[in-house]
Amino acid sequence: TLAFFIMVYPLYVWVAAAPSVERLLVMQLLLCTAIGGFFGPAPTALAEQFPVEVRSTGVSVAYNVAVMVFGGFAPLIVTWLTKVLGTPVAPSFYVLFACLLTLLGTYCLKEAPRAGKPTTFNLGVKP
Image (cartoon, rainbow, N blue to C red; front, side, top):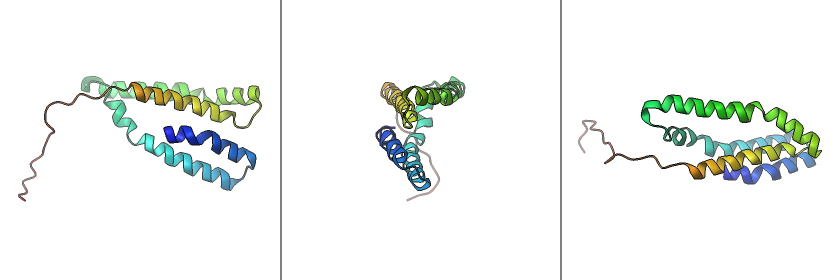
């Protein structure tokens, strides 16, 4: 998320300065690479925030409410920002805001409790 936060505005400015398919593809490649670093550990981090008994419900409700609010209203907010600010890079401000919320949420995550020793498995193979 931090890499995404750092890259999003400069890349929007770069693409808006001389729009082309090549620039758009480079921007998408860089941003998708950066967001991949977030989407890898995110499901585990989110799941660890809930007790085992309600983990499935907690994760599904938390994830889907976030997608509904931030994804559902994104077109409206980005269109409004573009009209009010009069700049083609206005969508990057919405993305920056979402990144800031994500960074804040990541900072507030609690460490999952670890019970005793790590589990080991006996595979029946002798060294």
